[in-house]
Length: 110
Length: 115
Image 1 (tube, rainbow over the protein chains, first blue to last red):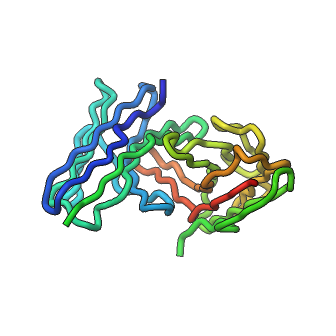
Image 2: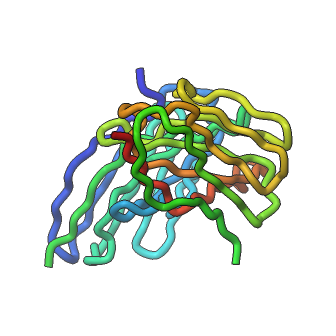
């Protein structure tokens, strides 16, 4: 079983739409959780951390459900510049291991 | 500027010709890793290092070597490259200061083609 599983998409949404991405992780010892954004052929960059209490950064809201081992990302009022691949990431300190999902592709259409 | 620098960015080589991809970070991070990214498989860890002279295998170490003689540098060595090592490679460095204070910083990637 994969450490992190995501729906690969692609998601094609119109500008202004709300879109939600989900992922699940298999190891309950995972300690930290993130969403990274990767533009085509470029390096991944941290979008936001994910906490059980939920956290919001502008149009982006991330949520963690430890009991279900489930992570979500909600993007409101989608912009063309949001088009990218979104990577769900979990972290375990032992071995400094980051585990990446395969990514969900988003294209925002004018 | 805080950054992770990889070189070269693009490389085409022939089977069996040894090559090294360099990685350097200027953030004084203890942890460094190498990943390869392939379509449908996502990012997979090749090797990681928790400090100078401390390295260990990740999920896909076969065919690769690393060394960590200095804190800032973590080169990836392919002693005898094969076509199945054609991939996009990323070096990353990170710190850990508690569950709410950790982040991986990536280099710009090296696109390797082995023919």
